Structures are given as structure tokens and as C-alpha cells.
Length: 424
Image 1: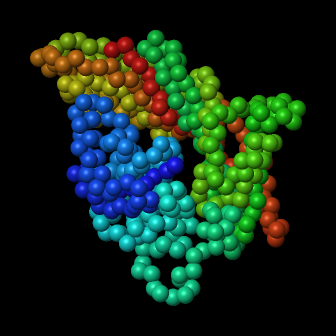
Image 2: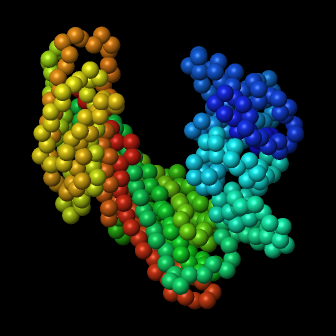
């Protein structure tokens, strides 16, 4: 079962717009939502599902809005949450910013979208590109041609329109991997994994059939080939265009792609990752006078690769003042509102080491509040490189007119949740 009704509320709990899909939950039940939420916040026990009698509220907060779905059955909560986040995505595509004002300025469009996105409590057409073909922000003129629903909505391929034409047929594939690393104060890696996604920008005419080949360990084991490096992917999640039955039977990623930009798949690789940028820090506090920080950053990746826009964020005491910096490369600045020193290095070649020293004054009166020990965090991006070694082996493009198309592949590694704890 899914949602009975969907509400969009402001921060005071006032209903801005709502849509009753099934009529089995009293619409006045929403009046209890904010009271129950505030009660939970006061107790420090905020829960994503709030119940009042037999009615369940599943809610998310976005900007200055609450999006709430109600149900009195044992609903599939993950489906409802996926729908609420999709709702945010579609509204943002339409109105650029989703907030109270954009809902009030576009009541008619929001009602039309709520009608199309869900039917009798079940998600229906949720692809914003397809919705934009027949729900426009201009007033609908009553012309016969305009009122015709695109065949895409009733098609087996609901994510792609027919009759698309390009002068030059190309498809761009981005393989983006984010590294999550947690290193303790002794320098041991406590947890690490890789979260990857394959994104497409498709500029192909007609209704092409695409086949993507990766160096997938399961596929190589099935076919008896184990030459070269293979990758064991977990938690693989596909765009709706991928034929899952084909993937399950022979690991072939076969699909008719959406036009333009889309995320084809995401995956996780649970492996021990060596931190690509290693940080050593010495933070010395001299009470009532000063704090001295020394940070050494080392690139632990191939010499031919370069990390771009590296940011090392070092926490400092909240009462520190009069900063002085010395760096062997890049520049450092103090961000007092976040109690951080941000050391920025535009270009960081592999195998290189850089040093940053910072000196802060401390007030003579001791700060009574016990401060925590926030970790050092690092942001970076390394092009033309993947940590896992995943590779696009081929991209076959088959279209009945037989045109030639060019696939382009780009690899990017970036920091995800990348934290190194300190002793200080």
C-alpha cells in the first residue's frame, strides 16, 4: 500500500496545498502533525514516521517546507519516501528553487503535477522531462493539439520521447567515484568504502539500444574470463531504463537511454582504501597564550595524476584570534564563523608533500566550555583516475537507421566523507 494523501505545509504547519488520493483518511488529521513533531523535538526523539491514532505521517523537510504523506494502512514507507524526494526533485526542475513562495506562485502547476505524479496513492509518471512535455508553466491554450497527451506516457518506454533528432550523435559517460574514509588519531584507517555512479549525457537520434560493458567480477566469472583487474560491485542501483532481467541472467547492462542527462547506475565497493591525500597534524595548545598548528599533506596516488581544488579544513578553538599562516604552496585563510582554517591548493601532484603552519592567539581567560575534537576534513577531485579500477570496456550503440555514434568516457575520483581525527 502507498499514500492516502500528500500535503505541503509551511513551517507553522499551515497547509499550502494538498491532494487527497484515496479519501480513506480525514484531511483534518494533518492539524495534529506539527504539534506531534514539536513534542518529539522537545524530547529529542524526532522520528521520520509520526503516528496519531491509526493515521501515520511520513514526512521530510525541504527549505522552509514540510512535505507530508498520510496513510492508515501498513504502507511501504521506503516507496513513500522515494516519492517525496522525487516530488522535491520535480518541483525543483520546474521552479528552480522549491520554497513556500514558489508553491504559492504556481498553485495551478503544482496541482497538475500532483495529479500526474501519483494515482490512487501509487507513483505514476515521475520523469520531469516527460512531464514538461504536457504540463507547462504557460497557461494551457485550448487547442486540440495541445490537449493530446504525449505517447511517451502510455509507452513502454515512458522516459524517452519518439522522433528525437541530432546532427551529431554522441554519448558522454562519466564514471564518478567518491571515497569515504575515517582515520583515527593514531593513523589507522577505521572505515573506508567507495561510492560510485555512472552518469550519461545522451545526444542520440531515434530509439537507440545501448549496451554497456564493465570489468565486472561476476560477469568475468560467469564467462570464465579472469584476465586483468575486475571489480566486485555491491548495492547496485539502476535507472528504470535498464533491463533488469538481462542483467540478472547474464550481467549485460542493456537499455534505451533517456534523452539528455541522467544517472544510469550507482554502486558501492566495500574495500580497504588507502587515503589518497594523507594528513599529519601537530596541534599544540599553550594555555592562556597561543595555539600552534602544523599540517603536512602528502599525495598518495600516482605521480602522473593531479588532484584539483584541494581543501584541507583544520578545526581551531572557538576563542582563537589574530591568525598568522605560512604555507609551502597554496593559501590558508581563517573562517571564524566555522572555527576552521581552510588551506586551499589548486593543483596537488601525486607523490608530493606540502606543509602549512598556523599560529593563533588565545585569550588570557580560559574558555570554561569543554570543546570536542572535530576531525580534519579534506575535499579534492582527481580526473582521469578511479580508485577501484572500474573500466568501461565497451559501449555498443544500436539503432535501426544504422548511424555511427561516438561514446566518450571520463573518469573522476573525488572525496566523499573524508575525515582524519586529531589528538588535540
